[in-house]
Amino acid sequence: MQAGRPMHIAIARELGIEIIDGRWATGSARTLDELQTRFTISRTVARESTRRLEAMGLVTSRRRLGLIPQPAHSWHVLDPELIDWRLHSSQREAQLVSLTQLRMAVEPAAAEMTARRAPLRVRAQLLPIAADMRRTGEAGQLRDFMTLDIEFHRLILGSGGNELFAALGDLVATVLQGRTELQLMPSQPKPEALRLHAEVAQAVFEGDHERARRAMQEILDEVASVFDAAERG
Figure 1 (cartoon, rainbow, N blue to C red):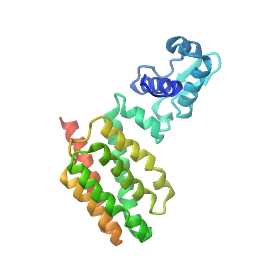
Figure 2 (figure 1 turned 180 degrees about the horizontal axis):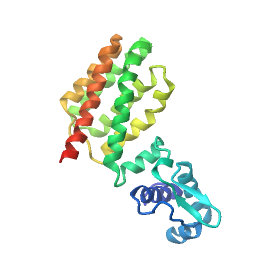
Figure 3 (figure 1 turned 180 degrees about the vertical axis):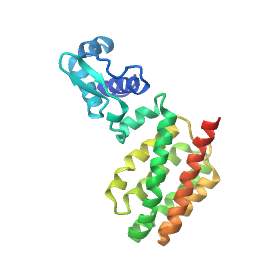
């Protein structure tokens, strides 16, 4: 378990990753008593941990049987916490590919809608963010770059007037944070990626919705190409 986390969250995370990895097999029951013994915890903490797993669809509780892991199609796969667990599991690469495919479907449209619909004062906010991304990226300040990258994509997802796009802000933030924490980002962002973020910002600011969509698509195409290359070895 990771230090610094509340006990029930740390235990839920450990058990969740076991389910994701298949080490706690679908249909294999465990009881609260077993969890209490394994982790040396109170029944209250055991219950809080398992409620977290139930809320994500990872387990179901059955009388006289205990907690039973559920198949992946029952999971709440858009839950940012579950996404974080999957990024820290043996399923990391598959999760990153799935999330990138989702981003490719949504973010170019979000950039287009923000260019079309967002007030000028909102669109203008992207310009200094993109400039700071270039500065921190070229300096290799990956933590600061990640914070700005999250802010950039959140603003685009949340400013086009589509509440479903806006709701994906936490998901994208989790992905970007996970890539940095797992050292899946280059030590210095590629110049092309920095240029394209600046291109999106400028296009959105000018209300050029077609160019905004195109530039965002190029950003995500570049991300997808990295995973394609990794799969080919």
